[in-house]
Length: 180
Image 1 (spheres, rainbow, N blue to C red):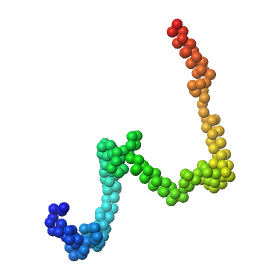
Image 2: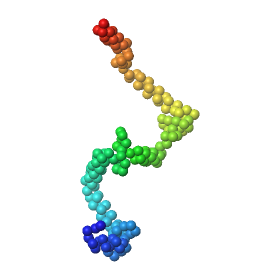
Image 3: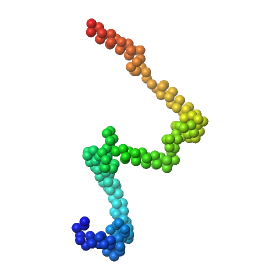
């Protein structure tokens, strides 16, 4: 309910409360012309101080999410409790996964269901496999990366090297001697 009784009368009778001449749009309170003028004005006002408006809306979003998290609700929808170990409910996570999948497919990415099926390479998603999960080019690349990783591994500090095993055996022997 509006505090202005005249404005409320126009709204109840489906007349635009701004110009008070035209019928209001269905399920709206203003006529199309006044609504469009309002949209243009709001858009212009928003873009005059766009950086501050973006910062303000970001701050409000952060506060809303913090409040929902404090109440134990999903930070996205605020309708259901969030799941343990997550900030969102299962429904919002599923929705986000579906949207991400659609966005990737719109960009031309191959759906994960088709990767590694023998037609498309699992690594590069190109249709050049001959019944294997990974194409020949990618296998050579993977082998080179694995060889490079092995060359840069320092096994001297590994706990099962000969020196470490000797130290462990010495410690065990000393403990047994102390027990006797």
